[in-house]
Each structure stands twice: as structure tokens, then as C-alpha cells.
Image (tube, rainbow, N blue to C red; front, top):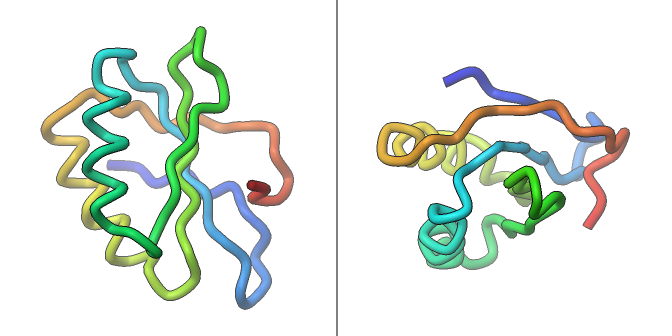
Length: 89
């Protein structure tokens, strides 16, 4: 799965991944990602289009990317570009 990076590249900046997902999969993804408490936060940035943002805390990028790759095999998660210059919460 191609990774979409849209974040500040400074040392402790969060890394954000943006995906277009089906509405029916949003709750499933939210529950799975919440189980990894302290590692990431998922939020909806465009409900109409089904765009979600996954903000990954420093030090957990590889772990969450591995999880996202596995989730991408289970549900449709299309990486998308988003307009944020910095990963803002």
C-alpha cells in the first residue's frame, strides 16, 4: 500500500496519513485504531467524501504503518492527499 505522508518533517512532529474509506468502515477502523491507545488518533476530516486522518505519534510510525497495511487488506482504504501543510489536530 502506498503511504501518503502529509506532515511536518521535524523531529517530534506527528505523521498524518489520509485515506478515503467507505462510511460503513469508519466505525470499524475507529474501534481498531483506538485499541492502540497513545499511538495514534483517527478523526474524520470530510464526512461527505469519507476522508479520515490518522495522526501517528512520534516513535510509532512503523508500527501503525504495518497495522494500516493489514487493515488495507480487510477494508477499502484509498490513500489521498490532503491540504494540511502540517499535521494539525
